[in-house]
Picture 1 (cartoon, one colour):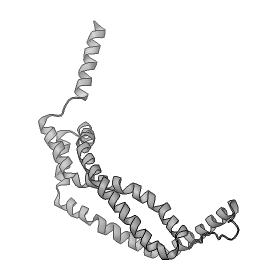
Picture 2 (cartoon, one colour):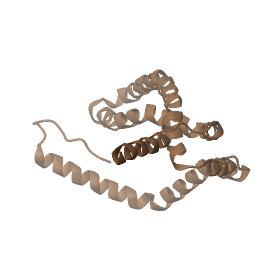
Picture 3 (cartoon, helix red, strand yellow):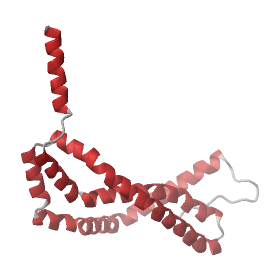
Picture 4 (tube, helix red, strand yellow):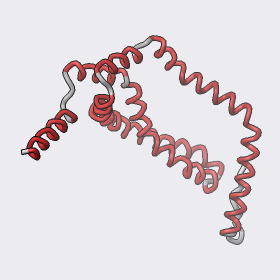
Length: 188
């Protein structure tokens, strides 16, 4: 009998853990998701662009070292057009899928971690004109900081990058000397 009562109690607790949120909490969760839509859109865009960024490094190197200088610009433009076509193709699909999955994935996490009162407070914060103003400044602040850091460290970074390039060239040349008549790629 004790085992049956324990089993019933455990099932009741499990049902509570996986229970649907109340209609009021569901409404609050939907509101948070609506307010977070710009971040969800950024996630989708990053998912589309990340493989392109990873692909560009070796492509850039290949263009630099394997393509005659007079053909580089035209080839670069063709490859950029191909990558834009890829993003135009997969971007909407990733956007739709991200928008569809976000409520289930993010909403479930919010439902598990926040009470109705906490969701109300969160919505109040997200709707705050001050937070909105601050968030809109984010890209400008990030750009200003990056420009200042680049300006103040450019000489040091360029020197270190040049030294790194020379070290890499030496290692490559030592590991696989160039074929007769071929020259090793020079790094700037």
